[in-house]
Length: 69
Image (cartoon, rainbow, N blue to C red; front, side):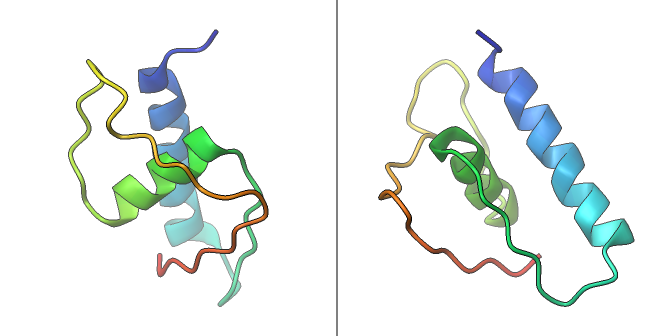
């Protein structure tokens, strides 16, 4: 299993890439709970403690979230 730290770094790179290279005003991202949790944390500027699972959210299935990147 990939570590949370590794997943976080990939999500952070993805967000940076969107900010720097997206030519679109709106982007639909379909993902799993862990990635969605990290997207939420990164965009909310929440510091993550990887020693516990408090950073993970319980998004509902098919939940729609709006983030400003």
